Length: 417
Image 1 (cartoon, rainbow, N blue to C red):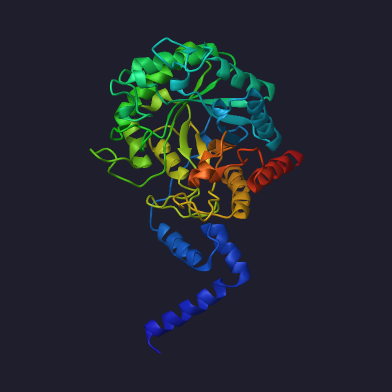
Image 2: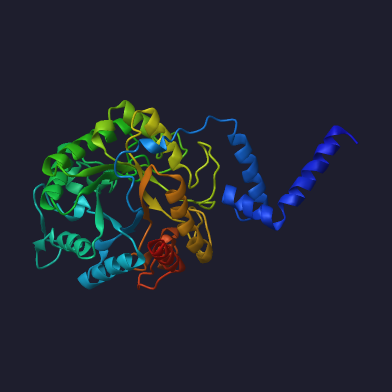
């Protein structure tokens, strides 16, 4: 028998052994894959990872905002027209055990018509644009849930090109953004402490039609953070969550997305460190489960935030934690394009508790993890079969999905231990 034939025989026997039940469970626990061939591929990826430098996570060096209950969820309370429905969303979040709500305070919905104008005249009768957000803050207090307020989405008046520059694009004058951020922080001083400056500045369309620009985003972060801290010295500043992407063309004309890792390093090079207390990342599992332990800069999986942490340690920010602004798996039906991966409702329900278990057991440097998302106010996404709809915990009519029940059971069981 030749050497190659012997190796093939040994390899075949190894695959046969691995295909058996107990080994399959071990493979899933290492690769996050449920099918056999992807598990084998994942195993080879893990082996290749042994040749790369290990990430440096400095787990014991975090000094604040990591040792907190991690259970957060994204909500769209500003889109609920009826106050009773807003209250129902918050009540059901509290009943599930969530202790954090990540809620956008869209600039365009508060300072609507012009700088310094906080009256909403889009419908009759006119009313204070603050009214809805006062109610949201009161609901969080009523149910003893902390708000993470995301400050983003400029009004058209803040750009000479208006929305032709992209509905989410940055304002022309960052002082306008700083003044808005200060107005929010001043109004809710003593009631809201956590503020996130923008969202996903490294991808389209969150930076409008412009190429990704880590240095300019750092300028915006500096302006927003300085204004919020001046209005509320107790405020905690969270950097804009960086979307996980391996694209490298986002900083060129015509480019749209730019690597989260390169973007963060350039933020540090531009002097961003003093202007945030918490770094934010996204925690989507996409095409593999929460137990996927493969680490490769060009693989996007649930473990990718470890690279963000590694960069923070290398840049002298080991004392700061990472928070996940969004995480979940997409239970998209067959009619939806699986651009965010695709799992069954049952897999989604199993994955989310496992993700929190991994955070609790393995990542002491990670604080809050906000599930994407509680519910939308309407069923427009479902009617168009958009994959964005199927991260939901509740249907638009408040029907609990299996993942809502599984995370509620998981959190409740931890409270009983």
